[in-house]
Length: 80
Image (cartoon, one colour):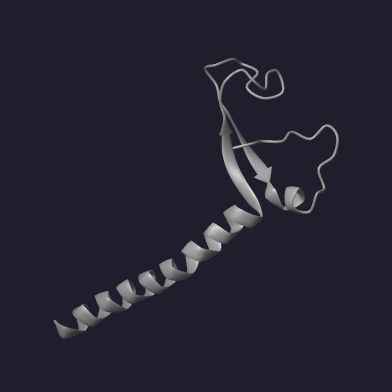
């Protein structure tokens, strides 16, 4: 019985330590490199959401290029 308690604690400790590493890494990636966003509505038709209001597209926003001022003519820019 004592061994199963230690077995469970080991997995809980591994989960917590992995969680404590994964959260800051994920926040940093979403803040500095890229962000996944959903485009809804007709504002970007026909490039995005060509079917109309019933569909929504998912896009990857590149934050790295914006931070380095590498935005070029023809790029789609998203403001939040």
